[in-house]
Image 1 (cartoon, rainbow, N blue to C red):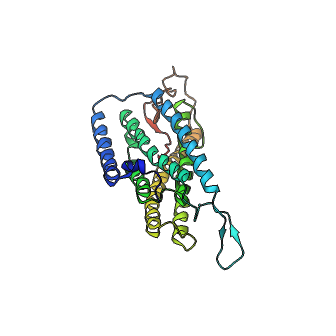
Image 2 (cartoon, rainbow, N blue to C red):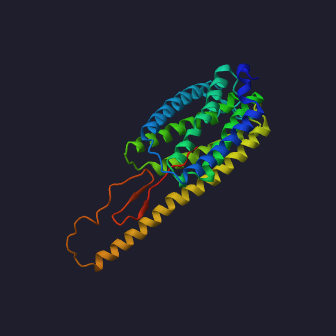
Image 3 (tube, rainbow, N blue to C red):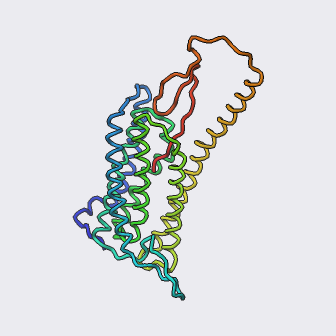
Amino acid sequence: MQYHSEYDYLVQPPVLIGSGIIYVIVAVSLYKFMRSRPAFELKIPMMIYNIAQVVVCAAMTAGLFNELRAGEPIQIPNTSFSVPNLFGLNTTFTKAAEFWVLVHYLSKFLDFFDTIFIALRKKDRQMSFLHVYHHATIGPIWGLLLYLGYGGATACFGACINSFTHVLMYTHYFVSALGIRHPFKPLITSWQIFQFYSCIAHAVLCISPLETVYPKYLAYVQFAYHLTMIVLFTSFFKKTYGADDKKKSKQQAATNGHAKTAVKAPATNGTDAAAAHDDGEHATNGNGKAVRRRRVATT
């Protein structure tokens, strides 16, 4: 059953469908609006936003994990063995569980600021199909669970792991905004992909006889949706990090070749030095050529 009847207006079909459509319209319109205008810096607003996201997502992670821990161990059929109930299978629906899923659903509207910041800063490469598709669909999906009365119990698993993933992501964004570089960007994207695989596993368990409360048709929807996310994020990972690795290999080969044949040149006045410019997406070398830096997709 659904406990938060006073919030029913937030999860009605017109709201769910309309929010996705309005998001796409605003994202495309803002992108086109900024094409002939200079980019905004927005460093301070983004830092505040990232900190707020870390706090909210950490609170959701703690609250949702606490609900998952309340689940009884899963008894393996026809055996005397049981395993920890990490997915919250057959967990009782509680007001607290649905509250945190409701907060998670509402946080997806807060995530729309990701797109606004991307558009205003003219980070066109980040305004990808993956980004828009995910932001336009994930909120309505969580709202649908609440609308149908299943926004609790085992649904806490997906909300919990996604909230934790966002803690990692927005911590990365905050650190990057400070100008601090770290080697963990590929690991964060790998964790995002792992998150989707874990949700696929969760869906399979919900389809199996082990889960007797969560509707099977919702589990099939969950399976199909996260399959699309795995395909899109895996493609993103290969394009982003695979391309960078190839460039590094070519640059290393070129460097080694020059080292064998180069003749010592006279000192320059600094025109060959790397420029200390960083717009958050690209660094530029002394010749003004763009050098791609790694990105982390948003989920």
